[in-house]
Image 1 (cartoon, rainbow, N blue to C red):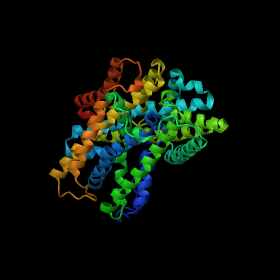
Image 2 (image 1 turned 120 degrees about the vertical axis):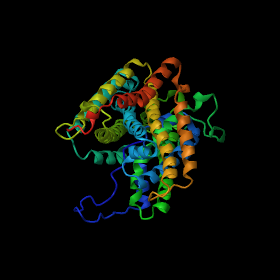
Image 3 (image 1 turned 60 degrees about the vertical axis):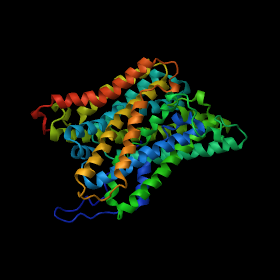
Image 4 (image 1 turned 90 degrees about the vertical axis):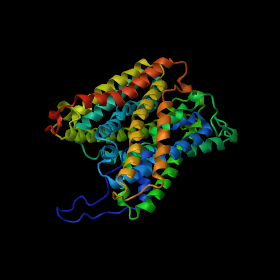
Length: 479
């Protein structure tokens, strides 16, 4: 997951009373848009630990999660406007719809600390690489970056989306291509790959559930497809073109995920890899081999720029969607519904920031920064997976209860797709409670308490309390 998709294409300047002109886009353009909103280098170190087996660990979730999510959300988006709240409310009920939109927002509470943890370790290579393993440094960077982002967003500053789009090229495509090229050159000079590259290593070795736990992180990497589904109405022939766009984007996303992960595994031994600083470790190693370590800080700045641009784009979006639904249905108290003079939901952002600050401080108290990063990534994924479970159930029920409802696109074998997607999402959610082998000697009890408390508390308990305590006076609170 990188940056959210743009608004649906269309003629927004049409005069009232005139027909809206649809501005069609090609399926190739849609594939590129989808790729740009999903692909990122951030998860590469996580999968580089597995070396050649990372190919298997990326392809499996792409088939059982990415593809069902893309096709199912396309049918829902082409038939019901209003996003995941509308889909789940119509397919199940309004409380479930609120839970779905809440999870879409709540996952960002843990997403920002994990994203900014990556920023902190990357920025360390610009200043002092030893800081990459410092929890105090990581906590400071998270807090400073987040609160700066809140200040920028609360002023209603425009142009942030453009910054994030440019960040894709500057901080993802260029560094990713450079990493792969240098990795190939590294091997071409006669250096031995740090990870074995034989056919025996295509499938990860089975050492219990913990050996496969890292695959959970890939579900988060592929998430966000339901936001891109809004563009299905901008295709001339959705039934034929949307699947082609999705398969092309899947191929491109897999290349962007797999090749840099392999390059990192060639250069940095798995036991030395940091889950947050692995990308910079690889650049530092390979630049050292070519006597060009002066380039490491430059690449670090590029990666930081891309991550910060993505954070700013995500900061206001999910919270705005939650606010609009809450004003209509009265799900949030008046304090959280108030807008500032720029029309921004500042109270929600500040409240979220206080929680983010507490989470950031955890980096200072958890000895291993990589363990903290992994824990928060798992919580993010599990909260988001609750929303996907609801979406798959709603899609099946809507197909059965409203078979004649007009849809611009009908997913093939919808029930089967939803079954596969639901089973994969549920399995990933449950596996997330198993500590990964990389967790080391950390306390299993502490890991379970933090993950369960974060995922179940924030994903289920908090929205339940908001729903039970709601009052009629919470509806349509003025700014």
